[in-house]
Amino acid sequence: MKKNIDNFNILRCIGISLVVLRHTLVPFVSDAWPLETIYNHNQYLVIFGKYVSSFSMPLFVFISGFIFSYLRINLNKYKTTKIFIQKKIKRLIVPFVILAPIYILVFYKVESISDFLFYLQYSPGHFWFLIMLFIIFIIFYQFEDFFKNKIKLGIIVTLSLFILYPIFAYFKVMPIANTFKYLPFFYMGYLFYYHDIMIEKHILNKKKILLFAHLILFSASLYFLQFNSNESIFNKIFGFYHILPLGILATLILYTCFANIQKLNNAIMNNIVLNINQNSYYIYIIHQPLLIVYYNSELISNSPYLLIIPLGFLISVIVSILISKILNRFLLGRMLIGATS
Image: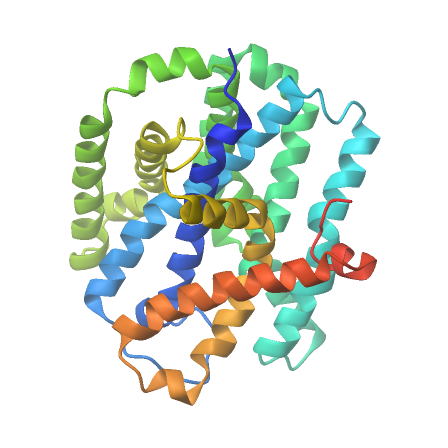
């Protein structure tokens, strides 16, 4: 019997929460955001941020693959290519075309059209995910029979494309680089719905082994990439490719812990999970600009990080949900955030 999608509610909630948490840490771990206020980097938060990262985006993409598999296999959705592409353009491309340019013009210093086009292709904030996911959807829809029926060959193809992603990243072709980088996690999610019973027999009782293996690999990544300044070929290769085994282990850990839990014992917590789960896509679209505005506040910049990080997380999630509920009341608002009709 295939898993009910309701079994995935808590895991979906955890997925978007980890993504938002990782972004909430950004000012303290890197200079990736266009912030007017400079925050001191904290070594402990850098390590914690890397640990969260090992779970966040791999799990988020895995969930996308799982839901795609559920919609195709269980509900027989997207019967024609035309319908599928129209829905994904509405869901992913329209919000990107509208919101990514606004994000770039508001938060980046753009002095020419070439600057704008560079940011749009190379660094459109968190909206890179929309383009990446659109390309993955197109690939899987067109070649679904191959990926579903020739799994071993599909894994080989997926891993081969993953190996190529640093080349595209080097030449700054980021939509393709990101697609190849996260394609294995989408395929993993697809297979986990299609073969859920068989897979669970092999992993459900191995939580401790998976956690131990993840900690060992994460510790190795810290040693080779964080504390070791050696620029050897091994370090470079390890830096590019360790995300795959680390992300797979992280996803398996969370899957074995939460994939079969439909509800919590606490009614309030169930309501929170339901709201975050129902609005997870909109939270992703809205939360990062909110965090940038939040961290540019002078009042916030003078506060201790142990206060402003959890506060920023809560504010970005709650306000994102409120904004999404308001936008969903209007046709233009629904178009803006790619809401389904």
